Each structure stands twice: as structure tokens, then as C-alpha cells.
Image (tube, rainbow, N blue to C red):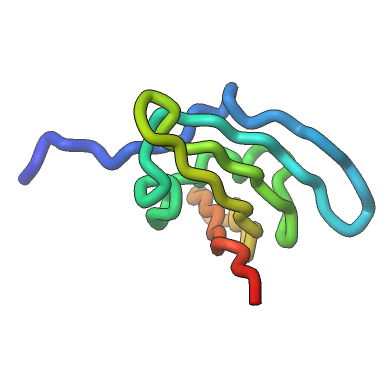
Length: 94
């Protein structure tokens, strides 16, 4: 068993930018790499903070080195049964 813990979000780095009926937009800045931010479970801490499906996260990752940028969309939020989960997907352009 490994003592290494997967990186998780810093809830205090998530800032509400705009609020609408359709979705909210948040700014999030972290030293973690974008690959870590996209990993399952990274945003689970946000489940208790009024994050809703279709909300957007404007992410600046890797701030200690080469920064990476992405817009993420909240696909689902679960807070039932004692567990919490926030699933996100990277918004792509066509």
C-alpha cells in the first residue's frame, strides 16, 4: 500500500466569478498539473459548496512552473449516502 495521496483541490482557491440561473462560473488556480486537476475525485471537496451540474471552472494549473489553462464543466454532483463526488469534463472546442 502506498502512502502517496492523490492531489485534491484547495477549496479556498475556488472563487465565484459569475452567477446565473443556467450555471455559475468559478475561477480556480493551483500549482497542481492539469492532469491532476482532471483526475477523478479532484474536485470532490466542492460538492458541499453549492457547485451544480453545468457550472464552469476556469482553471489555471501548474502555477509553479509552466501554466496550463482549461475550462471545465461540472457533469455531476453527488452528496448522498455519506459520500461526495464532483465529476468534471474538459470543455473542448470544435
